[in-house]
Amino acid sequence: MSEDAFGFDTLRVSVASGVAHVHLTPTASDGMLGPLMLLELPAAVAELDALPDVRAVLLSVTGTEGDGVLPAGARDARDAFAGREVALRGQAAAGALAALPVPTVAALDGPVHGAALEIALACDLRVAQEQATLAFPGVQHGLPSGYGGASRLVRLIGEARAADLLLTGRTVTASEALSLGVVSRTAAGATADGLELAAALAGRESEPRAFAAGLIKEALLRGGALDLAGALEVEADLFGLAAGGTAEE
Image (cartoon, rainbow, N blue to C red; front, side, top):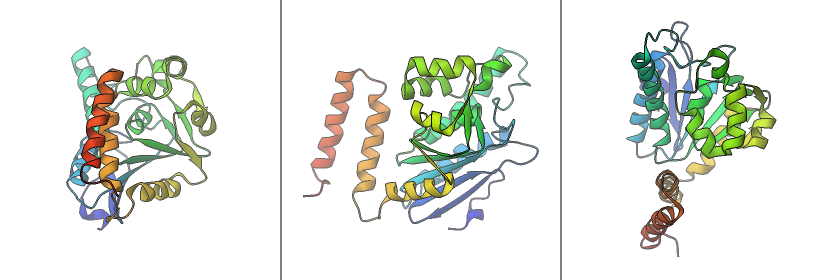
């Protein structure tokens, strides 16, 4: 499938061998995670979700200084209601990624800070280029996270580590982000490694991997909102669904 078949202005989207590659390509006027990108990203995710041959998704985020630091429209919000709408638009974009029933990988290159990093946290796994830096500098601009960064980060790395990054706004290297658990791995080339990882997660069309991956994601999404007893019930139900007719002998 050709990259221009989807017709987006701020995204390049391609599909090959079961892997969809969504590359954020901000326009000069819109910028990283500008209003147009926040509309196009969930639209692209919806289109990919409707394609049965997509078994994994890679999101490439290449940051530059200043890009994606503040939520799009935050500076222009005139009151609390307008500010809330800004946050909800970003949360919708992140939520669309998080709700995909296939494995998702974010490839992070350059300075991936603020809102851009919040979107990346909605993916299942993150690969950071070895020279990349990560930060949540909103506090330095008088703003908390708005796109779900705090909620996802605390679930990912725990309250103490999340508080350290969010309250200080400090910048961390890719290697420290790996040790903290913010990223899953580092690589000389984040996109190349991310594509390789996504291809491995996608597997071949004839393999049962895709069905199992969908159940695993459902267990993570549903179970994460429940207590342990409820999460175990969900896990048992999903295992039974697979073992009852799909698991290999």
